[in-house]
Length: 363
Image (cartoon, rainbow, N blue to C red; front, side, top):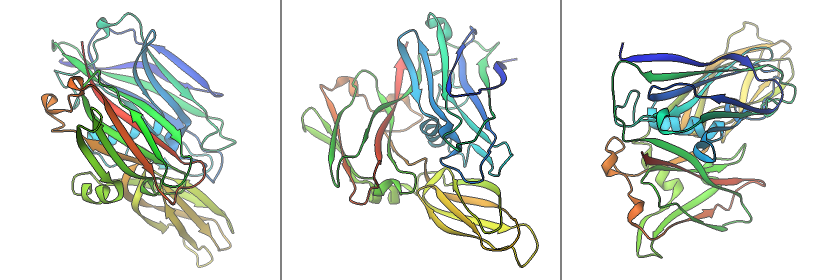
């Protein structure tokens, strides 16, 4: 058989906050690592999105960091790359397990023969999963992890390199309309950049307003855009996100839920229990935050979908034809590359701006 679906880690309960270290004891080239994360909600109200419990996904070889993103950034990169609608199966009620898929795609697509992770090129590759079960709910106890590898088996390939994704920069916004200047690396070609404007209940473009890229001290300006207008134009390019949601709301209660889309998203939720006394409705949908209210006298069950754009507050700036590795942003020929980020005027206290880069790393 050309390919193999290998179990890297059988399902385990992660327990208290910490880091799970897994040796990649495999010799075949890997096209994709699949990380299946299953938290069991213990609170009807959520504090953050499901993937937020994974505080970092790292692939390292000694001190060499080959991949480093938190759970939400990780899902955002996968959603933009794969152009799928969701990576979650959300059963958002007390006592139910939900499924959140994370992972690392080393190629442009599954089983890309040119770009794959070749473990034989490294001394001791390890996958490190850092986690904190209390981020989505203070009393969450059970959360399970399972990891698989999509490997090349009998099909012999000679990959030239792999896609490497990292959070390059992150900061807390200091003031309205403040500028942040970030020197970007020029060691590897950049396939895509994600700008993340994060706040739990604010749209990304109300956190970060403008992005400007400058080559060699303003010799060339390849990107200079208001991000709200840029996002509106890119909706003709991106896959719309669509995530299922099932929940229960106790009588007279209101619960916070957090979902993947964070911009221009709409909820289509219907009460699935009969009874005029059960009245469940939504009164706030912004920045990935959904507030559900039950003003009736009995428990309300809801089922439906949410749709929208900008997974986990991330805005994608792709460089060139994403399938042509020779068409990506070759920053290796530059002396310097600098990003200028401008905060918005409406950001909330504690808002963060981050830059995520996906680069072509050659062997």
